[in-house]
Length: 291
Image (cartoon, rainbow, N blue to C red):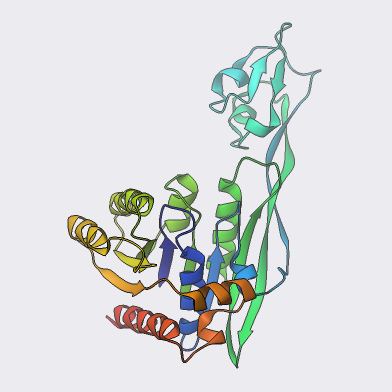
């Protein structure tokens, strides 16, 4: 089963939900948690773990053979990213940061004057997580500093997580509703939209639910910091989008402290009401799995 934890807005608590849910579900299932927020991955920080087992992520980087090039301009015409443009003498010039590595220029060149180079855009990691005799594997995607193309790193980290072939895959996405979120969400059995009852939270909740509906996935809502705003507005959105609020978490200093200390609340204070909410969430998901 693939469970995606997302939410549209940044800072709603997606990573806190994903990490604590992973802890609880790992007590019964073999599990991998994939942190696909590659521009700002923080699941390992919430777990106080150093990233391990690095694998490089490269994309194709076009290398132009000036001796073979006839300056026909075909490579410039087919480049949808506008990463190639013609100089005054007709020669193609590459803007590396715009290039997505799609290989269209390489395939279009009639004289094979473009060769396939490699460009490092990020890394993926696989880190073992253990708590009190149980644990799971954390796969993390990290975009290289200064890079703009997050998509290939998301795909590489997603593939690495899938290839571990565990019973449950939990995916923690980035904020927003862009192509990296859609790629992270792909093939989900359940999407948990984490939100908060604030104007920004409500606005972005609608957007992420719309994206989920367009992709055809089952969805539910996790209402975080439920005591800080107008909960009724979230309920209205849930009805509007034919879904339910699967769990509510009040604003909690205990979770804030666990966040700062890098120990999930389900491990730090398993007897707390906050940990119980995550246990109940895990039970509801197990019930959905059994169905």
